[in-house]
Image 1 (tube, one colour):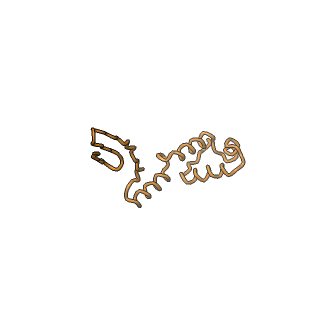
Image 2 (tube, helix red, strand yellow; image 1 turned 90 degrees about the vertical axis):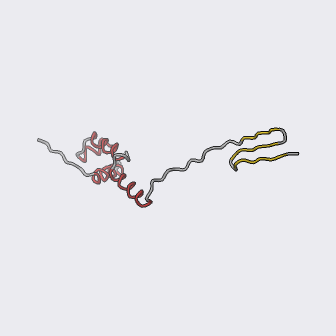
Image 3 (cartoon, rainbow, N blue to C red; image 1 turned 180 degrees about the vertical axis):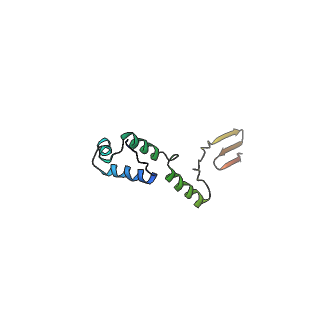
Length: 104
């Protein structure tokens, strides 16, 4: 009966890096290393997904704890400028607020 080896996340990352540094194709490297190509691709998919990679999650958690908040990108809304003219009264509404001018 052929056994199998369980790899830790760190070992998987190390193996993926070794393959990337080698000049061999993924299929050839997996054959030489005794790893199935299905496992290799599964690990790569799993480790490239930040939601499933515990190492990335730990780093993100530590970063958030360091800052004590979650960073949310600030969106600056686009405010159009509106001009209203009522006879001698000019009203401008825009980024700077409301401006009312009386022309005589």
